[in-house]
Amino acid sequence: MTDDLNVRRIGPESAATVLEIVREAFGSRPPLDPPADALTETEASIATRLALGGGLLARLDGEPVGALILDAVGDAVYLRRFGVLAAARGRGVAGALIQAASEAAVGKPWLRVVAREELPATVAFWTRRGFVQTDRRSPYVELVRPVPSFYEVATPEDMRALGARVATSLRPGDLVVLTGDLGAGKTTFTQGLGLGLGVAGAVTSPTFVIAREHRSDRGGPELVHVDAYRLGGAAELDDLDLDTSLADAVTVVEWGEGLAEDLADSRLQIRITRMTSGADGDDPGGDDHDPRLVEILKLGPRWATT
Ligand code: ADP
Ligand code: MG
Image 1 (cartoon, helix red, strand yellow):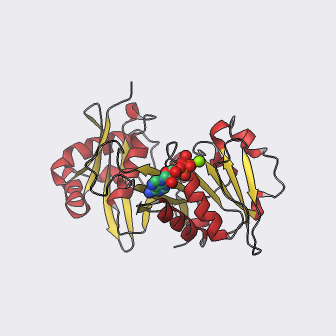
Image 2 (image 1 turned 60 degrees about the vertical axis):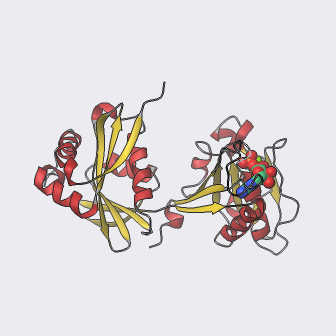
Image 3 (image 1 turned 120 degrees about the horizontal axis):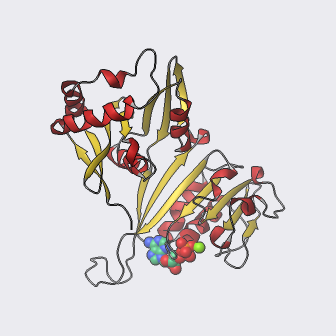
């Protein structure tokens, strides 16, 4: 059974609930000197912050279990007072809150967070999620991650055009991880990458081979196209018998989520979903209209230039 997890936008009316979560979550950490700023918050101070930037509250089976406060500063949205109750950890609450914060941050290119350097586990929590350290003003460490971009893609041709456009920002050594159901458009997107990189040979689904290499016709990076669907695990992915080194190629992995992350410390994570169920006839675009939503998330130091 999956947990009933949801995240909602909140305002000052939720200050008491947020304060309780903050006190429990920050109170269970090792004591710091000076103490965590979060522990000086009161219901009134939380309400003021929520009135300014709003916040997010996660509920698990109806019970409040996690929260954060949004604070827009310049071209970034800071995630403040991020806390998840100890009893609810390991159940996807933190990931859902960060995802919702990304959605709430539209229009701002960066998510930022401040952590305490004395808590390496907290710093590691953020870096595992693609945040990169930018500033260290002892005892504070500031980390940043780009907000994802979303594209509505109407047709397979538009999907190839988007791939070709993304290809212009890629260089040797880059890793692209594609996720989405069977038929979502991962291979179609990769065809666009191939066009943009000017590689030889038709890009097709590499279902019967695990990886296919496409040399560039114009001296650019080679495209290594991997289908991880039938792959045993990350170890096998590391062992692909390729003629080229991944450092010299652009590597695209279909079905790579959970497998490809260890290949490189940075990656473009691209998630493709169908926007219509496909079956019903009320789609105003007509029968052939089957748009996709493409989310592009740039993770790791390679993409963290501010
Ligand atoms: P995957 O690699 O994710 O399994 P494919 O790219 O092989 O998916 O297949 C996607 C199929 O959906 C193709 O036949 C493509 O022509 C079709 N299609 C229809 N509409 C779109 C769209 N808006 N974007 C991408 N593909 C689309
Ligand atoms: Mg495919």
